[in-house]
Image (cartoon, rainbow, N blue to C red; front, side):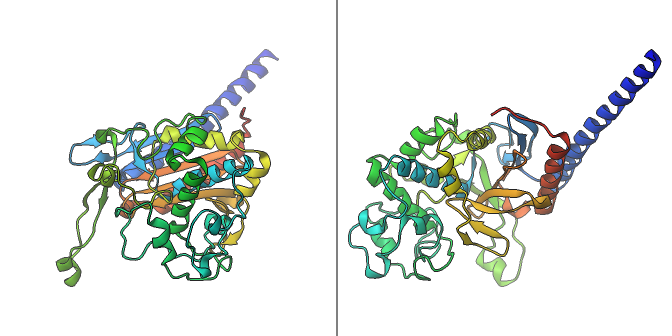
Length: 376
């Protein structure tokens, strides 16, 4: 009997060890493929508190040979929108605003065609505003007092509430609403009500006071006029880090609120832990944030600062990505599997999309097979 038990124990140990080996073999295969593709950035997979895989690749600064690490500060782009949307819901719970409020409550001289725009429309990209201000680049200095009047001069592309029309203008106006209600800079309000309670000490624009040497440099292969004329392929080059505009013009403002927060892998993990804990908001408010209000594509809908869709293997997926045209970050939260898959790169031209999709599929499978339970 003892020999039988010993054999069964050995067999179980062999199968368990083999399963672990297979899991690590897969992640190792992904890592090797990413290295082969010269990927630069971070990948991070977590199941609750348990980190399933975390790996850094390539250089955050090629010129100075600084490698990506878990401490690298990178641009999360429009993932910023979910923090602003959550702060709006906090103020709603406090009774200081309502998502049904119209722009006229917070801004003067609202044109007739925009008087019926509600905060709900701004949150869901259904206000009708274009993506960005006319004749303005992403980081152009904008007189923040004049931002509303500049926005109101834009021609609506659709009637308020009529259809989805992605707009950074709308979220920049929401940042102004937060400042109007709280009498604080919107980043300060988010830091106090969201980031600090979530132990996110390296996320934001100005408040973390980032040192430039830890900021990821963005790279792109933009063609110049000569290259475009003769169809000559451009080489990838440095375009600087994402806070260069802030350092170059201290004290100035731009289209804030819609994107551009800087962050780290550990802060993104802490944000996911805050989401799954449900502590920042009531259960009802989280449901409001994650409600699919409007279709943004064939298989995806938009809530408040989040896209809601069906992800890999049919799993419910709450997600958002962000880019400034050079960097790219992707936050995928699978609530049913209690899984986070986060990816960030400083070179969107070299982003291995299909490989990252496979990473998501296997991560979901691993969690499902293990049936792990995590404490909140």
